[in-house]
Image 1 (tube, one colour):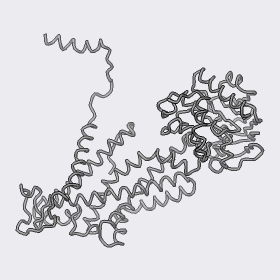
Image 2 (cartoon, rainbow over the protein chains, first blue to last red; image 1 turned 120 degrees about the horizontal axis):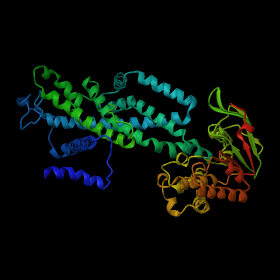
Image 3 (tube, chains in turn purple, green; image 1 turned 90 degrees about the vertical axis):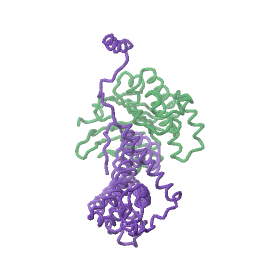
Image 4 (spheres, rainbow over the protein chains, first blue to last red; image 1 turned 30 degrees about the vertical axis):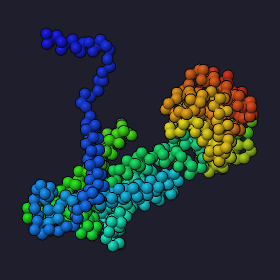
Length: 301
Length: 220
């Protein structure tokens, strides 16, 4: 009996002439990736927004009696070499890194979009000169250029933001320029020219709205990049002042105790840097698949 | 007089797709230009509409020789020529509702006050209902979108019309309706027409005279 039921069940479905995809039967992991990334990003956002005002704990509270305690119930991430709670320091560090990442990505995207759109809209010699300048800038390693900019100011959050923003607009400018060039040759732009639209009007009305999804995607992918850059600068001792918690500073100060076998002061700040940035990049990847489904999403960090 | 004389044009240096083409359209006259696919007639239409700079040859509109193309052409000169393109899907900004699509040339010219009246009038002329006017290009059919594109070309009352295979993708009844709209407009405003296409029967019924591509241009 069991055999007959299993045999007749698919037959009934065939009789109903149900359409069945002949494509790959393996299900995409997109939903899983999207949900996981969204949950992590939401958790991070809640942590950095709610913990500092609600917890009212001093992240700088030194307790030398409790120095370098391994993770326990009192201190889930352990304590550092002067007895400060690492979980709290990590949350504060992530807060600074996210601030730098978001502001720098926003500024970089605005600069990149403006330069790229202008280069493509004007074309000709303007385009050539601007894009050769972009090439020149991007031939210098980002970190070197960033260090050069940071070195001109007193240490603090804003010089780091300026440095990251000024080194990261180049890729956005390239993306926006190529998108605008492709949009510019469409017949609807010809129709607008024929209808008497000025260059400015065509750029604002037809070209910029067309590139905004791509520029927005570039901006979101820029956030992890900017966070890593900030951490790298802080790790080298050129970013934020060393008493201020930032993920790069935390890893930098914990380097000494790592040699003594204390793994937690470097591991947890490192995870706090890697996991949220991967989550943000994962969300951006899902978005990219949505606006351009034909191209497989890849992480570009 | 819309006069194209010895036009050589192309998209890469040294490889023209049109060589030595000459066409003349008198005011109020309709000229059909017949040619096989890929012979360069669309390029010639773009040159006539001041949208593509030719490598050689002159374009004369109403007695003035054109010296600039695209944005370098004076606004009044550009808007004196209405263009309807072959593929309405590509010729319509996917983000604009049909109302905005038709009104765009008026807004670009700073004539916002006329938008409501003129768009309503043209929508009736080309046969678009209010419901369709509120939709975006992906929500209407090719025929309906081409009607909107024709309305956009007529909105500034051009003295010249260039129809680049306007009806190539449409069924017979929509073709007839669009041709009727163009002819009514020309009777009312006395505009000249350059209709480009490969449908000999249609162009011979539609236009005062038809010329063949081989008669007006040199072989490339």
